[in-house]
Length: 192
Image (cartoon, rainbow, N blue to C red; front, side, top):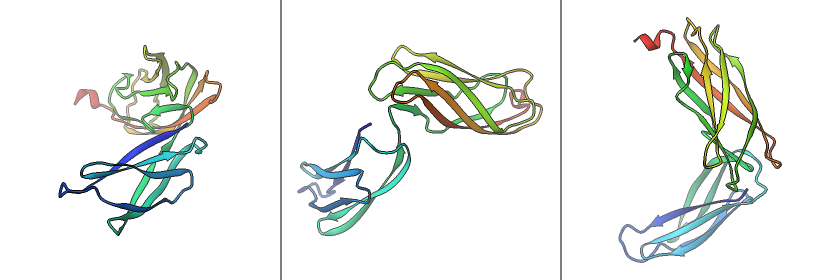
């Protein structure tokens, strides 16, 4: 719900820290302040508000460094109470039946254990005869790992995988998460 990051502006001469002035952000949901002036650097802290809407964001920090204007882009993805890694699940190249190498991990931002009640894949484009299912397992640290399983018979033709993965959670503040799913099936890839 609340996130912060730091940006360091360094004086390469190793002398006084750069003088930062007129600091502002393009979006009022971000706050930027000079957090510290160290020996040869100034540290800018950026904080996102707790009511930031989920999804991708773009913005910028503007100001002056020793009297010269600068712009630092802000890009990323805002989550709510549950964070998933990666942001888009890319199975990469699937060459044989079985569990795909790449997995999706979910965790609560507050560190409490999480449970996935159900998960399903809705594919919008995929090779003929691809049978993909999902399974979840709780890890010792309270996170959940989602795995994709490709059943036999393996597709005879190569092609792209595109779709969405929907997970229903036991989290009272966020009941469902939808993540993009993509990848490529390489027919005959295991034999090469």
